[in-house]
Length: 435
Image (cartoon, rainbow, N blue to C red; front, side, top):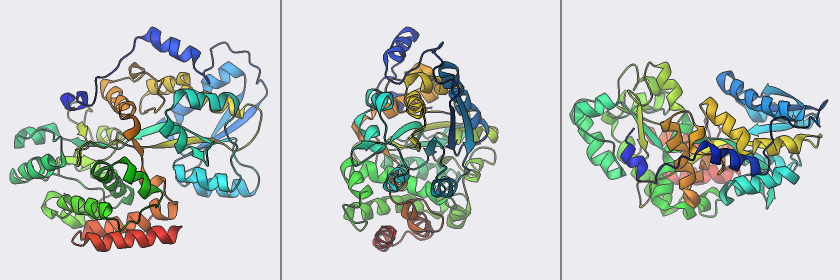
């Protein structure tokens, strides 16, 4: 990892363990070991999409709540399509007590259906105490708090093979011009394909767009576009598509050429960098680490990452993640929401690995390695400039549906990026249709 670039965004703050304990002990929503057990006999159901290791880690976090309150918490996986799971249960009047939603847009949709219970008491206090304004607003509808971002994903990093960079004699770029004019061009001249693209997974292309747009157009425009207060034909959108075309239009820069770029899904694109060594770089979030390790790479050694290059004045910090919401008024639900929003629960989760928090009270040394510590710190240090994944905030028919909306338009643009204005028109039409 190019440490000098991460440090340029702010020194890594590692607080002593004693300070961490003190912060945890006094924060709303935190529960202490050896609790009263006043929820003994209460049974709660929590539903999320996680399986495998993610499920195991989350259930370990839930076990802390059970131990301290006496409640019994059962976990149920929704599968990848959370809406398909929740829809029938809401209609039948049998929703889970707490659901973890993968898209903020779903918070507004379910709130409009009166399917959510607003945060109150300790849960509302924990949200207020532990999260900045942006994250509180993300889970709110018309000023009413409903959701807590319990798990984050850092979507503003580019992964690379250090041996490929060394062979070509290049360093991780800090700006988009460095990326296209020096790093990618030099790699290509050295006979090394610069990028492995994940174009068959349309959501990865929306992530490309969001990073370039946030850095080039700025946070205010980003928010306006999310709310559709400006059209997708706005000059700022066209400029972002023109910028993307500087990479997407170079077939020789992508493993398998343009056709290969469109046909390769995630995580296959990762294996083309690590394992198959068909390319030097792949863009996606921190969760690339798991796929790189499966391909035989060692994170921090043979698999490293650098911040998404700055296109405008500031490098982007785009975050994805999962939001917990209460769906019933069962006794203990608000206590569980407060616990999930607490630094205690999220510090436990951080120590298990494969996790990032947007909770301001979770300290850097809660994470098991320097790389994850740094990613977590960049989210917090970005302050008011950090933004949540745009495609997950807009209506799902536009931003998060296979073969439709942003996914389809950007896949077509990857195939042929010669007409940014036409692509912007298609995005505007798709956004309007979804509304």
